[in-house]
Image (cartoon, rainbow, N blue to C red; front, side, top):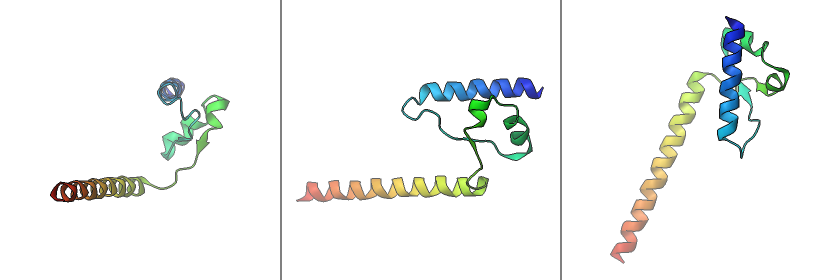
Length: 88
């Protein structure tokens, strides 16, 4: 079962690599107990790309929220500049 899961994971990584050619060999993060078990079974080139997580799921959620709020603020500021330009 673990070998089958590792094979599927390797295929998913290859598919992601294929659609992100500008960033070949991005780091791979595998968390949790199952991640540890699968990482040990990956082919050496993929295993070499594995890194420890920079944080936990709450850190990831907060980063997504920060990025979204930043983008919303940027759009709002851009809209305000456009409205101001039309008034001038």
